Image 1 (cartoon, helix red, strand yellow):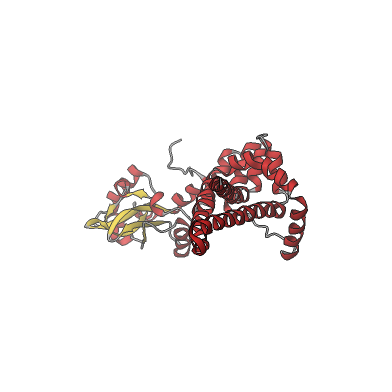
Image 2 (image 1 turned 45 degrees about the vertical axis):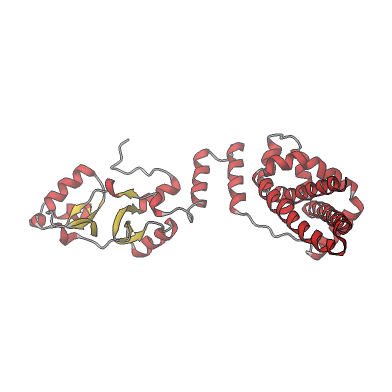
Length: 321
């Protein structure tokens, strides 16, 4: 019988620990969305989370009571079985059991399924709050006094994402605007290799080509800037701008080699974040960079690529309708 009670207390310990993470990982926007969709128990969930200090007291009080009960029961059982050394044995075993099965595992599982679990068990927490009301009230006031009655107000990235999704559902913004917000939030996380034009798609020019040859090539491919290579396409030495070529196309300079019009190009590593690349391009006043891995060229990225990641496709005069 004692082991059955001990098992039940461990389950309760796991439940209280999991509920703490499930309840407090929900953002106000998530809760508002649940209420808006009339999810079962959503109103009760919102009511509980409107008094977070009170909810925290209920959960921690319940968790500590069952942990103390489990530890005491285990100690009594161990002393009966092993004598005086039983207390030490019980302490060691219960510490491990509570850490793994009463803390780590339930918190991981409950966080993954936070919405579903919070909705399901909100009524139980509410009933516990009523049962423990006198103690909860005292401890809540003590907690409010110790924290000055203030909670830090800030909007996390997770909250911002939830607010954006909620705004789409309510019709405040359209899906394209939501996508733009998501892209802005990911701006610091995206690596340049994710948005670059790969090497096999690059339109490049040999530095020994002449102006009229390059002009014809540009007319066929319709870009504003072209990387220039020397001998090997992994050896990008700069780029040329179509306007520089057009300026001399009808002059005696059209017989010159393209090397006279090359502008310097920056090289960046494949895993650099696009926010850093964007700032670097602005500082260098350039619109193109070569993406490399060691000495090998992987592709190229332009300022337009970065902006398109944020706002979607940018049409210019060379794009097909």
